[in-house]
Length: 195
Image (cartoon, rainbow, N blue to C red; front, side, top):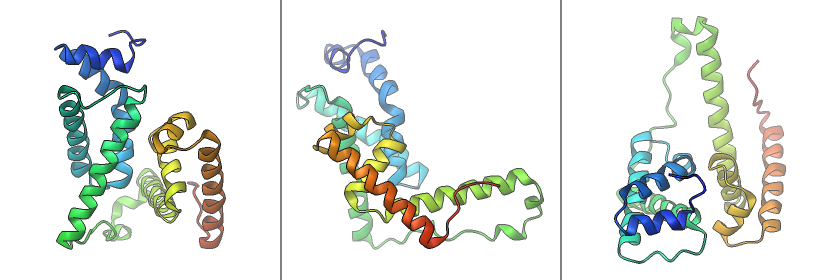
């Protein structure tokens, strides 16, 4: 497919029976959508399930004529993914499940830690965990902008469209998010670099 083909043209081709058009849509947007899901869902298998469910809903909506193109296909897909993430959290809350992600094995008793690459990998994982924890402490509107910008690689125009605010509001939320993240780093004395 031509990279200049618009999302709308691909959707139209898919509705007319060209399955390759939908494959192209998925290839075009999969990294942004999966990154967004993966930031909230830390279980890789569950994140992959939600990713698949997202595109199944997209297929159903397109095939039944419930998608009306307004030039915001990616924002629409992200909204579907977001709703599925929320549904997942609600289901977990109803089941009273407890995540075991916060418990880690005692890696310091491993002889493999003498290898600096493993130590650096551990430090990088810890940095990512610290960053995610700090992002999780931001107000919802600031957290959403950070996630969409840095994990889903969306432009501020795409973020503004997705969240229904002006570009200036999206930029302002990012600015306040960065200020708040710096404050948290200073208060908690968190270092985000590998020596």
